[in-house]
Image (cartoon, rainbow, N blue to C red; front, top):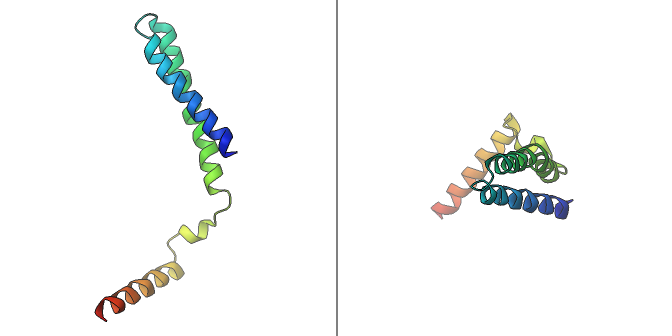
Length: 85
């Protein structure tokens, strides 16, 4: 999955660069290439990347609830105690 995302990212990047390269000679084709690369990047590559990075994560670990606030306070208190010693 990671390799597939990298290949898609580089192909979108190359298409974007190619679109800017072609645009002075043929503006309509350059605009089309730039537009397709942006659509591919935002609607294909970005969701795949986000899914790939979050698929095995527990969302509760990143939410700010009472339990996590208490953990943060305990961690800060331990840091202060270490600095005072």
